[in-house]
Image 1 (tube, rainbow, N blue to C red):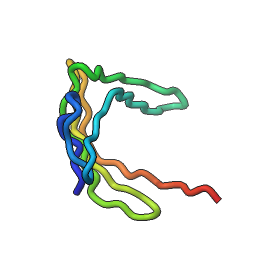
Image 2: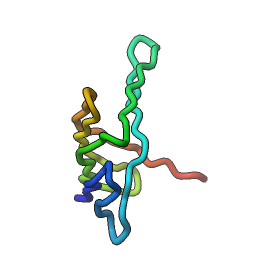
Image 3: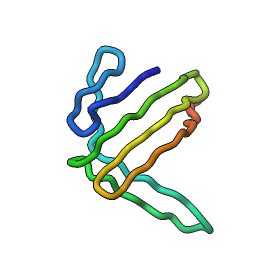
Length: 83
């Protein structure tokens, strides 16, 4: 499991290099319309965990808060390769 902690302050671990999140926008789609929620990096806190990674996909869990906004859940990212 890879954890990107210290999100707002830039600490964290991922291999041997530090990781930092500067900007987070959550986009959801319902009925053809996009809804965007921006999380302010100044007050951003929480964790993002990569639970498994393969050549085809990555599964992750996240729990982030920023002011009155929060998101928690899991997601899968499909990794595309250029041919």
